[in-house]
Image 1 (cartoon, rainbow, N blue to C red):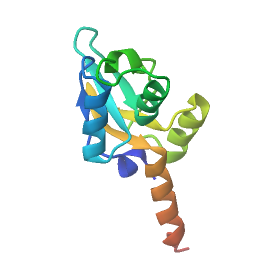
Image 2: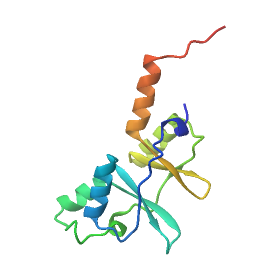
Image 3: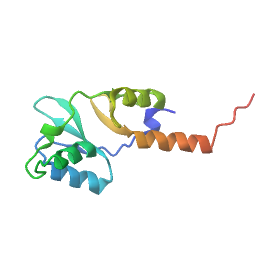
Image 4: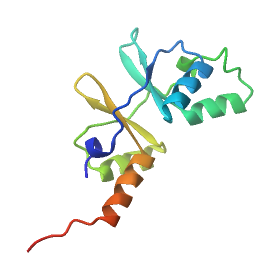
Length: 133
């Protein structure tokens, strides 16, 4: 199974000046655990996750003052839609993260999470493909 089969194509893209509270509200409303942060000044994409926001708030930072740019991971590992789920899982395990931005062309085509991979693998185990020999 490939990343394109598992990824969510609902990509929340925010700017670096969104506050953590704004990011959290948008992520919560869409029931997603990560947002792509696009900084047009650097022409780059980063990612902010629910854990980034949780760590900031847990350390006493003000979610109405802190911005996404301060908590964005910019050293991002991107996945391709044609990667296998095993390749994506290996990248996540090696990097110690739970989300990958999927790039197709010049921009994000989706996000794949550990939850997406588990959902696909669980479904595949329930409905194994029968080989005809």
